[in-house]
Image (cartoon, rainbow, N blue to C red; front, side, top):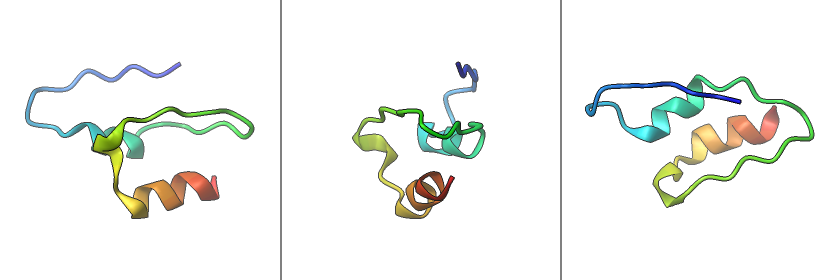
Length: 45
């Protein structure tokens, strides 16, 4: 479970850098998360 509260100035995609990923888990994201460098990092985890 992950919860991070920000002010309105922080874009949602930046939260990808804060998540601790777990092998074998599924992560569902909307289109606002199109940042291929971050998604590749998630894939590598």
